[in-house]
Image 1: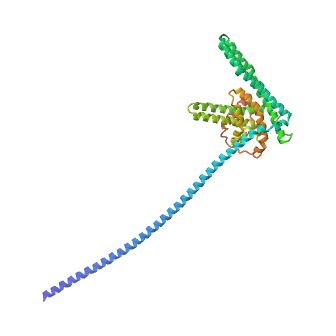
Image 2: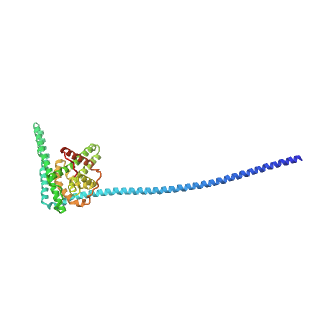
Image 3: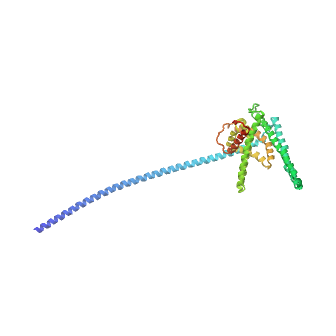
Amino acid sequence: MSNQENLKAKLDNLAEIIDSNLNSNEEEIKSAKNKANLNDVNFTNRKDSIKLEKNILESLQKDKQILNLKDSKENQETNKIQEKSIYMKFVNNLDDLLYGLGDSLQIFNIFTIIKSSERILINLRNCILLNGLIMISSNIFFFYFLEPFMNNCINSYSNFSYFISLGKYIYCIFWLIPIFLVCNILTAFWIDEIYYDSLEYVEKTKSINIEGLDLMTSIANQIQRQLIVLSYILSINLLNIFLNLFSSFSPILSTLFFIVKFFAMSVLNSLYVFEYILLQKYLKNFKNILYFIENKIFYFFGFGILLTILINFIDSVTISSALFLILFPFFLIASVKINNKRFSNQREIKIGKLRFFSFIEFVHSSLLNLIFRIFKLKSHSR
């Protein structure tokens, strides 16, 4: 009996243990299941979060593509505007050059103005005779006859070489140089009269507003003109020296030297022609003329091309100068004829910093201040 009870008791204990284990397993299963459910929720949430981030990223990429597309379009538009601006500037400069070249050809269409005044005819005749018959013929006689003859004499009669050379220098000092100076001075005054008579005919009036017809004012104007031209010539010569240092190294630099010199000389010739009409009608002083010419520099380059070609096919400086003084009045009359068409709407000029003429302005101001200091004068702005 006791064995049965013991066995029963053991079975009951075993049953309790198994039941306890089953309960424990059920709790573990529930806990595992709860964890699994929680993981599923977390996984789902994470999945949704990743999907949301992916959507945001795709949206940002689309926005970035749109912005890049907009930037690309803006850059393309900017490039087109810049290209168009460069093209328009090129076209405008080309138009200015062609207009200037066409206006210079007006020298063949000014005979009505020349015939309108007997004084214009007389002054043109004086310019041609003085500079052509006397100045050019004197230089031709010296360079092509007297100088070769004296050189042959020096070779044949070496004992008298000193006296022969002295005779050559005497001819230059006491004839060529005085003739050169006299021709320049007299021609300058004749050109003034040609200008005012031509302006009276073109403007169809006898009441041209001329500031100062007295001798001293005329001399002061001529000095001011010569200072501007001298400043320009000094600048060109300095440029020539600089370019000559490098032109021997390369034919490209030599070509560049020729182009720059031709451009500068063409602008110089236009400056010399147009400063009459610009200073008298439109502008206040020579500095404003430089601003004006710089703003329309290709027009003035085009206008000066023909005159530059005509006076630069001769190597002699004195003969070229004489030829310039002969041709200059015709180009001056042409500038008077076309001035209303070209400049009447351009009286207001934007005053800014000079670029092309900056060094010329500096040289001109320095020369002017030097003259004021030498003669102890006070500087007055015109």
